Amino acid sequence: MRICIVGGCGHVGLPLGLVLAAADCDVVALDVDAEAVARVNSGVMPFQEEGAADTLTAVRAAGRFSATTNARAIADVDVVVVVIGTPVDDHLNPDPNAVVAAIEECLPYLNDNQLVMLRSTIYPGVTRSVGRMLEERGVKAPVVFCPERILEGHALRELRTLPQIVGAMSLDGAERATAVFDHLDVQCMVVTPEEAELAKLFTNTWRYIKFAAANQFWEMANDAGLDFARIREAITFDYPRAADLPGPGFAAGPCLFKDAMQLSAFAKNTFALGHSAMLVNEGMPLYVVDRLAARFDLENMTVGILGMAFKAGSDDSRSSLSYKLKRTLRFRAKRVLTTDPYVTSDPSLSPLDVVLEQADLIVIGAPHSEYKALVTDKPVIDVWDLQGNGTLV
Image (tube, rainbow, N blue to C red; front, side, top):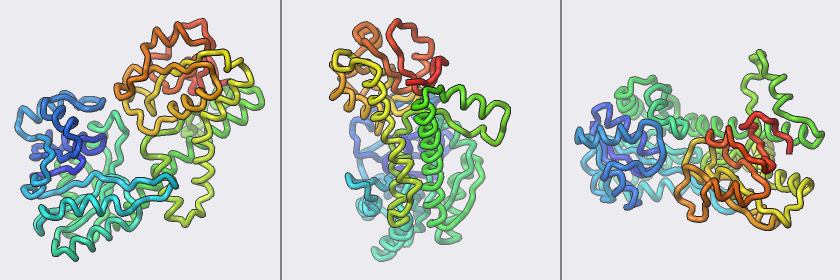
């Protein structure tokens, strides 16, 4: 099977391409990022992903995988996977036309014998819109929506184990999409495109709401001078009905907030639960800074933020709330220093030893394991309870 992944050098497309190539498919990753394409073709991963570097080396050596910026690669494949999601604008409105615009660029190279698979999160109704557009342009290729379900950093393992959702408008589309995932030996659940689109939005928004509940609980306990870490331990100890209560922390990244806002737009902005979750999660940095200002003389202090990625063990800083924390502190503190052992995209980062030496106050922004056993005589604000000393701020 020959497969072209549009957006194939990113966090969603590249892991999929690697596992399919490792499963004996011939894969080409099409991407507009020439630098990422060059790195991939030289055997270097453009971001961190467990097991990906070795897999990239193996599939390139086997001649099963390559990357290109030339859209003509689309014409020579059986399956075109489009990893272009629906973004939200500055007013938190989704742009359903983003995927359609990407498909229009592919149109000159599409043909009736191909399968078009949309992979990233999209606004409900986009799959059928793309299908109608292809029909109007004379292309009879079936269009399906198969949402990615991976945990960033563990994508290769999860792609080989998790069931796949196939949102198809026809039996032919469902069978051809299932055939793609048969290479990975995983089960498929076939539903309508709209059911698949909402399944993806519901999944991410459910996680976002759970994080918001934990963060709101933490704020309540914190305002009462109580350590939520101890309360949560009491709740969850050998009690299965509360086992999924997460701990507090900065709920961020490129998906959860965006998808909650897409779902809100789909509900005609009546999704009060989603709006409330957004207010809690996005307000976390502001709450932390207010608490710090009440305890410390911030105007005369240098604050160090440890961890600028949006989650632990990642080099991905997209939509990280550590940067919102940084912006807020710059108006309240004398100086702000930041560091991260993984992020390479931010030239303003300082080495950890410099931050520890010069900062008067430390805030753990991302719970990287490197900070767990950190020894310092400076006050440490640890919302995550990474160090096991409680979460009081």
